[in-house]
Image (cartoon, rainbow, N blue to C red; front, top):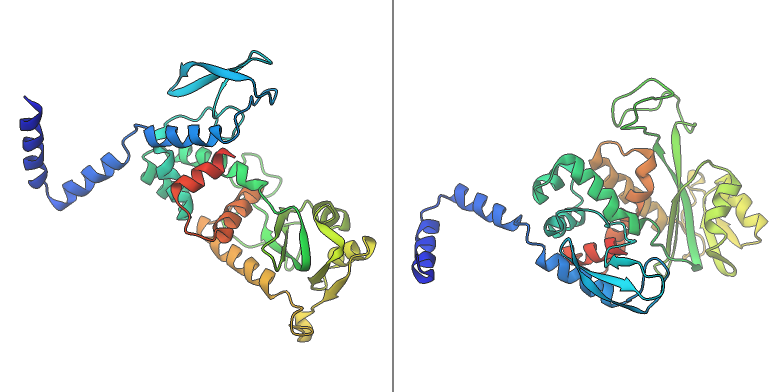
Length: 316
């Protein structure tokens, strides 16, 4: 059949489809695994900083194609690579579905919903989620200046997915066996300044050493005023490093000092983070840092996130 007649017949058949059939066809075409757009985006990101991921050399030349991506060879170390070598997405297949999956991250969808959107298995969706979030995990502001707010929040420790537990298993999202703070709660430190600076981390414990390891490299001794509640580890850190601080004790009815000193920004962020995290019905503690990076990416975006932006961030 010649092209014109084929096109005409295709249009006629499309008009005969029911609404359900048309929706299914659109969904199938959306998931079509061509990968051209993704490949263009990957190559564009690589061209911004062309270098060898093995030796960081810049004397490279093209070396054919492999698995749908252009291959390069380094003249310094003589090793070959492509635009994804050394990135969290190296080795993943089905690149044509990555943009659909990136859109699911922007929408904060669950593993199963994201799998259905991208047309992949649930296990693939789970693996992709943490590969896509790997680069965001360490993407933090490196300095907090001016008035900064710091606080700790606590998430119930979870060993979801582990086969051998040191305790009796409980339902996802269950309650701790002990009231109040205990070893069953995982501490998370979040610090913000008034200029958009942001630092967060999952702490191994509630000690001053754990807090210092996160805040000492990023808080300036002379250029920051640290607002916080009565957390002992934060107070010990500020005193040891001789950082000026202000205590805001909410349980005493204190909320704002001198009209500008408060911890309402960080408290608001903690509240939004916990509410956002609840949709995933219990996150394994070992993956909490990835989710912190994910939430930070959504919060700090000044413009609506596009799948292309999310994919570019995942490449690193």
